[in-house]
Image 1 (tube, rainbow, N blue to C red):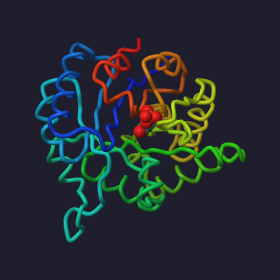
Image 2 (cartoon, protein in one colour):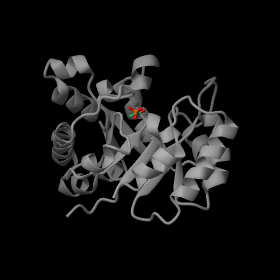
Image 3 (tube, rainbow, N blue to C red):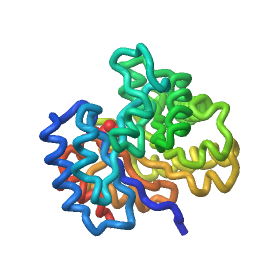
Image 4 (tube, rainbow, N blue to C red):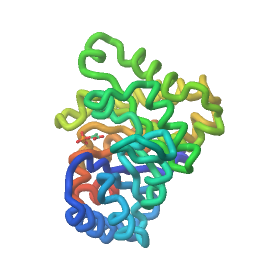
Length: 252
Ligand code: PEP
């Protein structure tokens, strides 16, 4: 039996003004009212975080940031600290998204520092990993994931890792409309869980939530969620629409 509570998260990326963010979040909160069997999180842009939090704080929708810097404060123009994100109402933070790795030079080392900073400030990290199409075609998927996970979680104790949520996001499936098949997702999720077990023990591996991300839509969520090691989804494009995202949340 799967004892892990499903977690469905929406990554709004660099979309929506403040007013649009509040409008979508408010609509979503209404649509998912009464849903208690799934943890629901949305990650609007930094600028809309506090407003969105105010709009959904009485509902079951939780708020996350799309990124953080690891320092508490200082001369780091343009950055946001974990404390600042928490003060805006965030309980979660997405770390190491492939778009940040690809366009903003994030490395496994910076990802490691950010995960640590999140944990130290009571933010739950949603730690993203995934291979590119080229890496998959070269049969390197498992090597890449092994490296990303070992480096991202290097120096962590089982206690530290307890709260970490992993998100397997094959880069070739993000925003492309190509979804990994449920079999492909399950194969990788099982690999990730086994690796977590080797590194941090059976208990942590058994309770770790591993999300799938990559062109998740109302049409494919049910099939993905039927896999024993798929515990939820990180949704980009389809999360921008409150009705579609609510349908994903209510996949059962
Ligand atoms: C994402 O941004 O994490 C993502 C999976 O995007 P999409 O659902 O649009 O593929």
